[in-house]
Length: 390
Ligand SMILES: Cc1ncc(COP(=O)(O)O)c(C=O)c1O
Image (cartoon, rainbow, N blue to C red):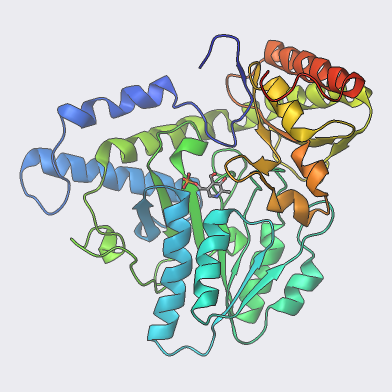
């Protein structure tokens, strides 16, 4: 990370904790045996490490060890859950085929659902309330006798809002629909117990909780039918073929252990810093909070800034602050999440997502307030500067 850059983009990814790197170290070149189906000692040790990680992960999310399927991350977990459920139901000749989700889901969920919709699975994409929360009456009305699955994320990656999972789980149970929850931004950050919440399928990702990139998991209720999306050597109970990445699995377990150990203290500390950030920026005027004020992750702040051009604002910030804008940079298209809250294209473009993390301190918050204040006051005085080349 560049020396003067303040990193406040922890929803995009988190630094892998040095203790996690240390836990993974022996599993690359010393204890490198393939854990699958071998009888010699190093292979049995590798298999034992994978099974221990499976048990710990299941306990961390309130699920069962036999329900854990290691994947490359939350995108793969969502693809396996959604396509796997749909295909398995179709194979059994189920009459339930309907799929329901919120407009604010991550693309890792929206895209596989759209893929299924193009192949004949009826899809309902529900709007959200202006604060980003689900409208439970609308959700109840959307779940009918032919609904197969409802997909609602635990915590939104842009605006941090926390959906009422227990109420959604209860609705799904009552009506016989499965509940899939993309919990990539929630696991390790807020308490989550899938069985208590009525979640049938839960996805998570290592690099969102100070673990390594390239590892995640889908945790399913044992016995729930899934069609594999990757075929080959039959690993992960035949549901995700491919040699298990033992170092990454050990790293995920270590990261989860650390995240659960400091979760409460971290949430309290980052919540206070986030409030300090908001209090430092609000006096600028024309600052609008995106998402529910309290039903949100403690380390998230997302706001729209009036009276400035979004691309100029982010150009002005990029050398000092690592934050995200309300437009998907690669295509320049406005955020579908902010659009679902009713924000205009212009408002979405001039939005800033702050994601605080373990390494964020008061000095980082002061630096962020100073950088945004300088950029916003400068652009409001001279809307043409500093310009895209700055
Ligand atoms: C809510 C949510 N779901 C899914 C993903 C995809 O995660 P991964 O990078 O592990 O595939 C992300 C990451 O941006 C996310 O924030």
